[in-house]
Image (cartoon, rainbow, N blue to C red):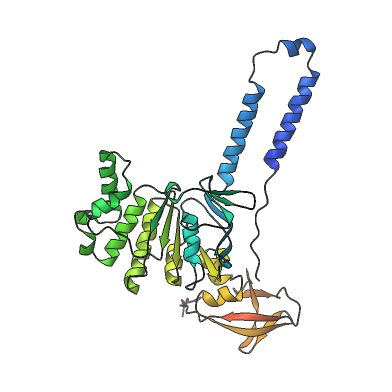
Length: 371
């Protein structure tokens, strides 16, 4: 059953609590004798109390708010909308992914997050800092270089005249010489290229160049890492193995990242949250498992994984199709170990679409008694 994602409503408990405390203090002051009001004992001032209460509210909001969020982002040129109402959230250390066909707006969305494309509307927040806030009444955007983000491009964008070590150190200009040297050595070890530190990029393989680009992006310790189809220039076998290697590196460094790709295997292998994009809209933002087993629309169902859509109709609590009847299995089993079934939630006669996938499973035979 498909459900639309809903925005969370603002929590007003902290506001109510502050109102009650303020009212209680006000009543307490009114009841005090005049003499006590004129010569009160030493105690924190009201401004300090308000400051303390405000600090507690900020700490509570920081603990509950997502590390990275985008709300209603719109990007377009003239009369053409490229990204329409993009909204998503990521916790710190999570890896997100924009997945979709070419021209669906995924790279434009990534560039708008980085500040490389101007947005018409929407908000971008990172680590409780507002990076973009475009509304009818407000227009605010932090420059790309000041957003605290790193980016890995599709063509690596390495400097051919610099060594591997100098490429990695390129973004560390404000670091001291000792700290820069230590950080470069740490990054080389992280991507397993210590022995290639003095080589030029053209002396490395495609996979090694990609790891240099990743190390260079991670060296300044970005708050968010953006990867624009970083494995598209590699062969299939190397692409899958490098994707797992990159995920391991990002998890070890607790780096929050967003990947753009059109490859489902790549997205599912690397990302914690995957967003399927279609015609500029984020159709569904969920875990790989949820996308595969609980698609929100027929488009997502057909796009994720191989399968075919067939027509069905609800009759007597089950689905009748050309391939046979389909029953809804519950996560409940009887004493014999057989699953229990229940009726579908739709009334009889409801036409529905049924996704059919070929599932390959391995069965384990177990003897219940001696032969």
